[in-house]
Image (cartoon, one colour):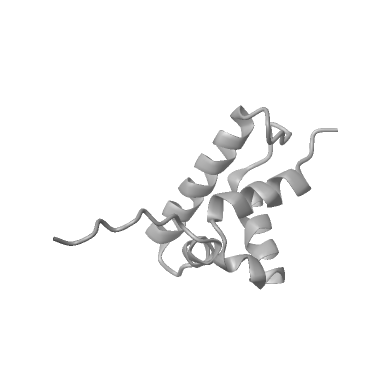
Length: 94
């Protein structure tokens, strides 16, 4: 009998690889993941982020890529939690 594998979540490094992939379908998948995280954050009261309606996924994607390039120590952490940190820091509700 084999032990069940634990569920492993996407790391920030894996998200970065997807967002910067030379393959369009892989980049598309990374952007969809990012949109799902941001949509979820927008629904949560505990992680308020405020964006203008004209904010586009490409802007958020570029921001996440830049932040991960500048802070490589984040690469090993859960991607959703890193995206949350980046979004709260850059799109605060004031």
